[in-house]
Length: 62
Image 1 (tube, one colour):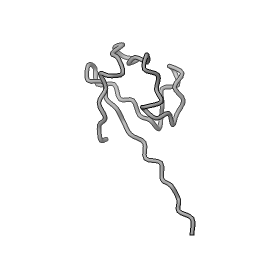
Image 2: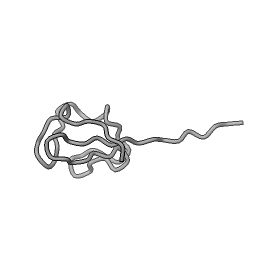
Image 3: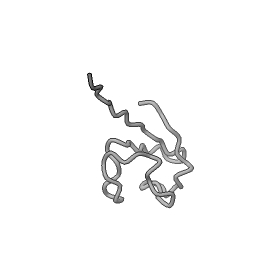
Image 4: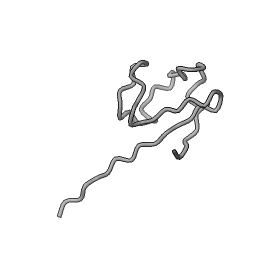
């Protein structure tokens, strides 16, 4: 019997301004399509609210 894989998306919060990056929503205005995993977001991507670097984000439970 085949199993159904459930995609669990995570959220990451900017520690500088509180902006939330939700993997399910992506960040289309910055060219990141919905469903993009955090590890697939380019290293040079910055927070759209405060320009913080990717390493200034932390995974959060929402």
